[in-house]
Structure formats: structure tokens, C-alpha cells
Image (cartoon, rainbow, N blue to C red; front, side, top):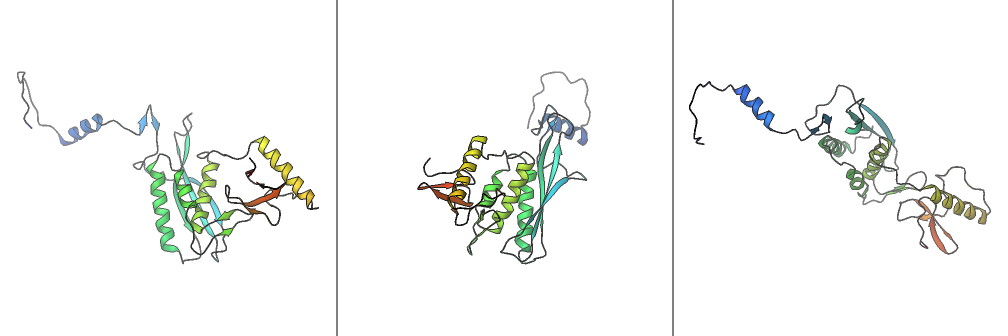
Length: 233
């Protein structure tokens, strides 16, 4: 490229390569740092120590349990902008039947975590995977369509725990209404209400909203005792 010099040359020197690199770096704005707030991105180096949680996943599809470990990185520690975000995931089991795809899955999920941004979409993507052999019901009547969906459920649990996902559960009014409906149903069947809120009456149907076997028919209306969904509005 030709540059026209309009002024008189009064001095010159040979540019140093390191100096040129520093000048180029100074001209490029840091898109991941605003007002000294560090954001998670793929170039962020892994610290020597990370905090995390391990979730046990036991399904009727496998003989041995899976252990899902999610490690988090804490950004802007000790400031008002402190954030805890998932950084990597490991899945371990004595069962080696699924070793290859489990390793591949953990690497892909970890890469998405480190990319930064909104990673909550992973939960729905994993929970939408269906096993052609059929799913199963967890304790409490929640339906799991596959082992991959179970891993997605563990990730969702962790994201809610660190505050990345907000709890969209029932409000106090809905909880009271569901408790009243449950007590009425138990009384009509001549039984005592269960002390465990995760136990639902026998013969409950699958709720298509929360995928939990907790829907019962009361007064000719199908009502879910877990999420409050009702065909009668």
C-alpha cells in the first residue's frame, strides 16, 4: 500500500516487531471486558482450582449409576459483579457401554460452557432427546424420555442451584390450591394425605406440561397435583 507523505521527514527508525504487535493489540477493543468486568469467553484460562457439584444419576436403563460433575468458575470474585458460571462437565460410571458418546458429550458441553453467553438452552436440547426403546419414571412420577434427558435434568438442577436459571415454580396461591385439591382427592378415596409432597396418588395420569405422573380427575376435570395444570382453566 502506497502512503503519500505531505510533511517534511525529520527523523526515522526501524519498527520493532514486538512494538507493532503491542500497537495492534492496543487498537483492538476488548469485547469481553467492560469497566473491568470480566465476562466468560473461550480465551479465558482455566484456574488451578474450580468449585463444583456431583449429581448421582441412577436409571433402570443402566446397571450402574452415572455421576455427573459440573465445575464452576467464579468471575469478578469479591465484587458486586461476582458471577458463578458452569465451566466444565465430567460424567463417570463403572458401565463402559456408553463410554465413547459420553466422552464426546462432555467435551461438547464443556466447550459450550466456556464459550460464554446464554448456555441455558442446553437443558431443553438434552431433555428433548428420546430413547427409541422408551423412557422411564423417576421417583416422584417424573417422566424421563432417555438417559441423555436425565443428564440434562442434572444440568438444569445445577443451573438453578447457582442462580443461572430462575425457579419458575408455583406461587403461594397455586401451592395452596394444589394442596387443597390433593387433600380433597385423598379424602374422597378414604386415604390419608401423603407426608411426602413428591408422592402422588396411585393411578395418577401423566401431565403433559410438567411430564410428571401426577394428574388426577376431580369433579370431572383433569388436574395436576405437581404443577397445577388443569383442563378446566
